[in-house]
Every structure is written in C-alpha cells, then in structure tokens.
Length: 169
Picture 1 (cartoon, rainbow, N blue to C red):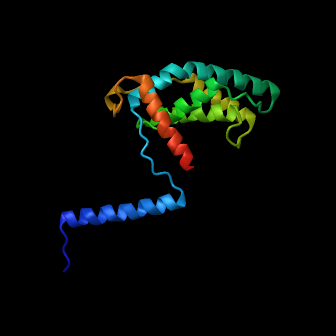
Picture 2 (cartoon, rainbow, N blue to C red):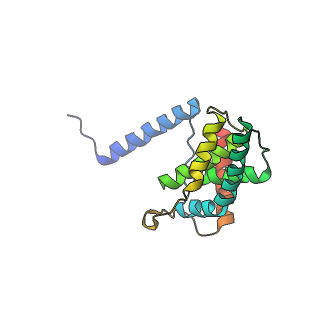
Picture 3 (spheres, rainbow, N blue to C red):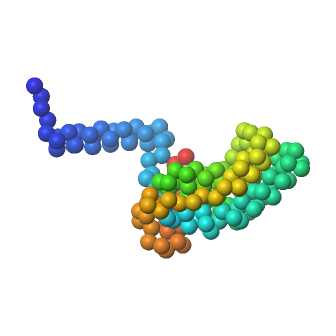
C-alpha cells in the first residue's frame, strides 16, 4: 500500500498545476489573475453608468428610427467607459459584474468594436431593458479586496492588468 503525506500530496498537486498552467499557456488560455474589488466596481458603476446609459439610449433611439445599426464614433470617452466597465466586470458580485459587462458590450456594439450577431432592434430593446433597472448593492456581501479608496490609482493599476490580459488574447 502506497501512502503519502499531506505535504507530498500538496507538492504533487503544485507540480500538476504547473503542468496544467504551462499547457494552458501553450494553447493561449489567459492565466492572469484579474479580480477587482466590489467596492471599486460599484464606484465605477456610479461614476459612469448614467452618462453611458444616456449615450446608449440616444443610440437605441437612432437605430430604431433608422431601422438598422449606426456606427457611432469610438471616442476617447466611450473607450474610457468600455475600459472602466470591463474592469468593473471582474468583481465578485455577479449582478454588478454582469451588468458592467453588458454595458461594456453594448458600447462595443454601438461602435462596431465587436461583431454584431443580433439585429439592431433587439439591441435597442436590450439597451432599454438595462437602462430601466439600477444595480443596488448588498453591502454585507461586497468584497473590498485590495481597494483602499484611491479610485484613480486603483483604476490605473487595473487598466494595466486589463492591457496585459488583452495582449494575451
């Protein structure tokens, strides 16, 4: 009978995980640990949501009137919103993360930054659907992680992580 100690099993698991990580890296899978504080994500949401949603509602109105997609210009402001909401989407709160990712994706669809797979009217409906509800946090479940309430420094740090992550794709 072959018995192993906990330490031996831990070492074997560490070696196996290293092999899996190497295999994943060779296949192009992203290995960057990219978590964001729920508090930070909520602050991003509060700072940017209203303005981004207002833009999206105007965009939805245009595509309803036009009957098809309209390519909005990818401005510095829209690009900033996309980055901020993509970073916020890495938080642990699933509702906040999913709403942040939807806003980022709708902004990308508006600017034709990603492939459009749904018709324009469906996108307009989805935009109005997300615009009518506002995320409200349940503070007891929010994760602070490494966020120390310095918004600009934390955003800069996470933008660097986002760029690393994009470079791996």
